[in-house]
Image (cartoon, rainbow, N blue to C red; front, side, top):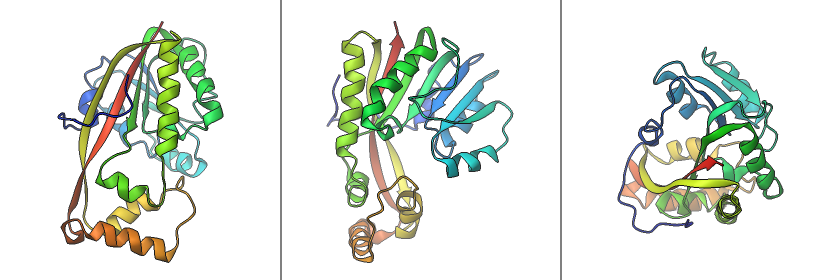
Length: 233
């Protein structure tokens, strides 16, 4: 297992990777579902899928409840305290969320994931890499380098301790496009989990850096990811 891959050649939308797994007729758990964008895609693809989507942000959870999609059940809880029975879940997904778990709860979260998974079932953990143009911008106001290292080390340790088997590790990139700086600010800077250290001076620096790309119009970045697919053993 490795934290970073410098030579990523595979470019895709992550949902295509997700759909290579057999998810029909399954009970699926998503932890840290955010605005439920991936949740909705998984729920609306295939057939006979039940999705349980968990989020810790109360504001976002209330917004998710308004979606009212029949085969999605939204829950307010974190990965370290999953309100489900033992061995009740066929597959678990975490998209860009494991590194948001507090350091002292990461090991407990992995224990909870293992507890609720059925024997031999898979957990899919997708984490953004700390590299690339978009990352340089975001790290100016929300630096996640250490928490992403912490997340990787915990996942790696769980494999080394034979809590899980590494089913597959892969790297890919996906294209992210912003119409202008206002679009970037809305989608990346106005998030509830960001650090509260924004000043007008800092925002101007971020804006200047953003506008260095294509004069700030229709800016595209290749965002790199690592996916660890672990199997309960």
